[in-house]
Length: 443
Image (cartoon, rainbow, N blue to C red; front, side, top):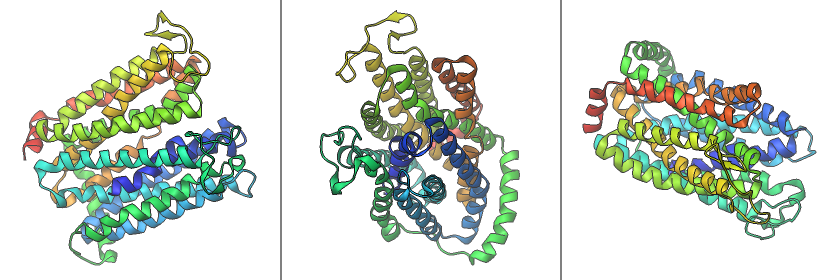
């Protein structure tokens, strides 16, 4: 239920609702909004990268994880709720939005480190893949439902005053002030409070080992040892390096997928919102299927298969624009007033659905494989290193796309940088010894 509770933060705030609102309607220009949002993301990511391994080491030494989840949950709730006050023209609206977003980011990411580390205490090794896959699928469903609620009942088009489902906004939310878009913040906070409760009420925690103050001192010592262990453990080091590549690629793919569709296909908010719903549906199915395949085949084959699908889909996306598919096949332009009527739009939807289906297994199998690679008494610490690996280079994907696009002047060529990152990740993962991955899957 943690994945269900936390997913609206990623779906509503960082991807489909609040982030586009900030860039398009709160900042002075979309370019400035994108830059400011990127700086806030980078600042939060740097703190997460530096602090996650330490917090993980402290939690492993102290034993209990729920108190840490509770503390970081407060940050997520307060940050998400404060986004409501970032209204157009309000004093300090931009600063409020960026500070609240950064605070919520820290809360969500740190809490995730500790909930991930609870997995091996809940089920046996043979069921870890299923647990991880069901968790991701549940999260996708939560994101889907929250997106439908916001787009269908809260956020209205400023020109028509109607939501995606044709309704007037609920609670009298004013489309002129983008109240429905801003409401995604409080909704995320309320959603989290309600649905994270089962974790605190019913999920067992590990026993307390020592006071937190003592654990913090020991945490520094263990963190140094953990970093040394990661450097000396070729298997773990290769996996962390591989995950940097393919997770950076996946981050950039989701960050620029809507932008690419808007530029190359002329899609607007309605089409991008429906596209997001499609991705969450296929992501749910993919995460469930990936979890069962993980238990049957092991996490490494699932990771390799998911990356092969993602690389193929990225190559397909690069081949599409409004008048062309597969680079050279000319097609009729879309008819005005019709949704997804042209061949490029249909192909983009198909490829997007496949991306959603492969993204869930990629992420779920990653944390399953990490459980198999980690030392049992350093599981939270290792997940902290995993968070560090994901955040330390998280700027590479977006910056690579932006840089290549700027140099080439082409969105198509810019997106191709994502393919390179996926290939790098796949090559490094292939070097993780098959025997060790197989042993972890067979435990």
